[in-house]
Length: 332
Image (cartoon, one colour):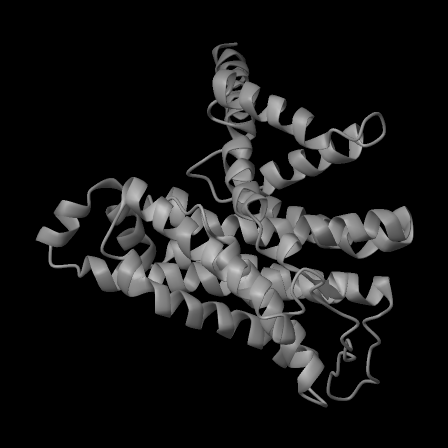
C-alpha cells in the first residue's frame, strides 16, 4: 500500500469515526468533542502567530471574545439571521478588531508584542464589562435564538439538537482547520516562516514586514473569531469571564506548549491532553487549575518538545527498526 492510499484510508476511517461518535458515546461525550474542536481551532489560530510567525500573543481572547459577542448580538438583534451569517459575523468582527489593532502591533515584536496584545485584550474585557446595556456586563448575553441550518433542497435542521449541532460544528471547524493548513502550504506561509526565522533578511529581500504581519494578525483573528462564534452557539451564553478573561488567552498557549511548537497538529494534541487532564481531575478534586498547572510545568521542564516530540521519537524508532529489518532480509 503506497503513501497516498494510506492517507486516503486514514481520512476515510477518521471521518467515519467522527460520524459515529454521537451514536456510540452519547450526548456528554459528543459535547466534549465539540468543546475539543472549538479549542483546537482556537489554539491553531494562535499557532499561526506563535509557531509560524514568531509572534507571542498574551491577548488572543480579544479575537475569540469579539467573535462570540458579535454572534450573540447579531442573533439577538437581527431577525431572520441565518446561522452561516451569524458565524460570518463572528469572523468579520474579529477581523475588524485585528485590523484596528494591527497598526500598533506590527511596529513591535517580542516582549513588546506580547504585552501590547495583553493590553488590548484587557481593554476589550473592561469595555464589555462596563457597557452593560449592550453586553450585559458580568451576566453576559444569554438566551439568544439559535437559527436552524438551512440547506437548499432539504428541510431546515434544528441545531438545538446536540447531535445536529455536533455535525454542524465539525463541518465549520473542519473547514477552518483545512484553510489554516492550506495557508501555511502557500507562498505566504513561507513568508510567515521567514518573519519568524530572520525578519531582517526578509526585509532585505524586499518583503514588506508591517503589512505581512498585519495580514497574519487578521487571518489569525478571523479563525479565533470563528471559534468564538461556535462557542457562543454551543453554550448559548457569552460573558466576559467565559470569552475574554486572561485564562482564555493563556489556555491556547498552554495547549501549544503541551502539544509541541512549530507543528500544525501539536496544539490539537495539546487541547486534547488538557481536556483529558480536566475530565480526569474533576473526578477526584475541584482544584483542576492546580493539577493542570503542575503538569504543565513538568512538561515544559522535562518534555519541552511536547507530546508531538514523543510521537516523532516513536515514529523515528519504528522506521529505523523497519529499515533495519528490511536490510537484514535483503542480506539473507
